[in-house]
Every structure is written in C-alpha cells, then in structure tokens.
Length: 397
Image 1 (cartoon, helix red, strand yellow):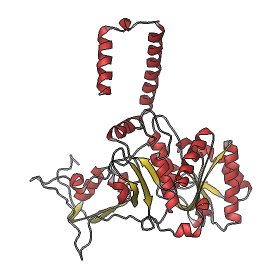
Image 2 (cartoon, rainbow, N blue to C red):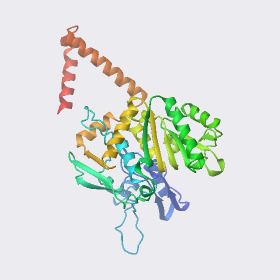
Image 3 (cartoon, one colour):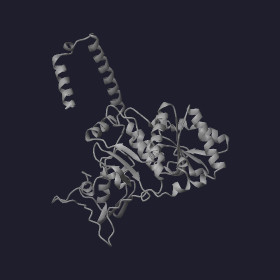
Image 4 (cartoon, helix red, strand yellow):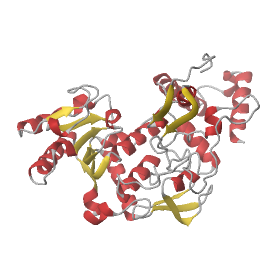
C-alpha cells in the first residue's frame, strides 16, 4: 500500500468473506480499487482464532484523510436505512452443547490451573464485549477482571432444534482409548454403522486429524479398514484436486487435516488423535484453536477421540463442561494474568523453543551448583550478578 501512489479504481463492488484470514492491508487495497461509491462488504468471524485481536474498527482500518478525519466511519443506524455494521448473533450450524464445548476447550475454561499464570485459561478475547456480541449472556457474576462469571448461550443465539431432535449425549461424545489401534478400529466400525444402519451418506461424514503434518500417515489404518468393507474414502487435497473437498457425486468419506477442514462442514464429524490438542510446548494456543475449529465443523454430531493420559485430561475438561450444563463458569483473568498468558502460551519458532529449553537446563544446573557449593556467587562476576538481580527485581515489581 505504501508503494501505491495513484491507485486506479476498477471495481464497482467487492465482497470479502473470511476477512479475519486477511491482513488489514488487503482490505485497504480492496478499498482503493473501488470506484467513488466504495461498496466494500467484508464478513468476518471473531471466533476463528480465539486469541487474536479483534478486527480493527473502520476508523483504524482505512486510515485518515489529510485533514485528520477518518476516511471511513460507520454512521448510527437509522430506521428505513440499511445498517453498515451487522452482528450475526445466531449460530445455526452448531448446537448449544457443541459450540459451548468448543469454546470451553478452546479457551481452556475448565483446564487445570497453571501455577505460572494462576489460571487454567489458555487465551481470552482482548475485548470482553465480544462474549456478548457472539451470543453469550452473563447469567451470574460480571465480566470484570478477577470476578467470577458464568456465561451461557440462549435459545435466541443457539436455536434448540438440534437438541430437540437428538439427546446431548448423542450430539457430542468424547472417548478415550487405550491405544491408537483401538481408536482406529472404533472409528471404522462407527463409520460403517453410519452408512449401513443409520442412513448417512458418505459426504455427511468428515474425519479430521488436528495435526496437518501427520494426517496422511495416521489416517491410513482407518482408511484401509474401511476399504476392506467396500467403503470409499479420500484424503482431501491429496487424492483430489486442491479445489475439491467433498461432494455427493464422489460417494466417498472425507479424511482431512485441520487446515483443509476449515471452511467446510458435515453432519457427522470424527476428530481423531485429539490428545495432541491438550497441551503443547510453544504453541498451546494453536493446538487449542485447532480443536475448536475441528469441533465447529459439525452441523449436528461430533465425536472427539484420542488415547493416553492427555486424552483422559481432555475428557475431564469436557465432563466439567457437561456438569455445568454447557455453561462457561470461570474467574475472569486480571490484566497481569492476561499478559502472562499471552507470553507463556504464545506461538514460538523452533529456534525459540530450543533457546528456552537450553536456557532452562542451564539455569537449573547453575542453581543446583550454587546450592551444592560447587560454585559460588562470586565466581559469576559482580557485574553479571548485579544485572541479574536488577532484572529479577524489575520483573517482581
């Protein structure tokens, strides 16, 4: 944008979907390419990345005129005139239990408290009002720092037609298995039942593996088992062209990694190896977002599956969601907790991860040597010890 001195308007109107996936500069470019009426419509979902900052206001997004006034400013809604800013509070795709579970696990509402932060939360909206904008109401407590609050979805924001059709225990299930083989056998049997006994069509079913790098390998045994039963499957974007995810004519069950799943949906969603989303050093927020995205691909039923100790802990979180009637009950983090949360749970590069692990190892070794008397504080050098003390005192303020 800084290099575009004289933009040439060539479009009468532009519609941008999934605008949260684009940088602000892209929307500014779209704005410049429009004729004088500037008919730009952009739709975005604040919840696609739970720890991201909110979409900038139009005043921030499109900048200012030479006189300092905003180039774009939404006017106050007037009767008889179309709104410039529309919030869609109703969620028709996901039932109340499914969406509340996705939020609870994505944010870490019922996750065991992290002693480094003082809360189990993994991430939180940067604006408290977003909870209300996306269809929650505070039925108890307040959305204020350090306060206990209970948030719930209403029939207005989550119509109950799915809950009226199927029981909650049928809409959403979590299963922990003793091994990956047990998980894979269960999934293959469940899909066969869906198709042979429950009147599902192949394109009604998606199997999602949260880790995109391992998907091709780990879905192989399930697909092989289904092939032996004469059930066709395909790995989206691998067995098909990049533009094809699934369709009724393929007569094939879709397997996919999380990134290919985004933007797609199905009546029945199986999420395998969900234990990978419980915890992860250096990208905890990312793996929790992956689980959130996977769960919300379901238009009706979802099965969250995994194995091992971390899957057991994930099941425990879900059980707390269910015990609280799919309401979000937690203590709203303070500004200090939010700051620490963003630091500790931030996404790190491989080099950052290696540096932190190396630093921790060296620090532990240094402390043990000092405590055992193998080395003395004086051995470290006066200037280095002074700098360390000043830094630690500053951090403790």
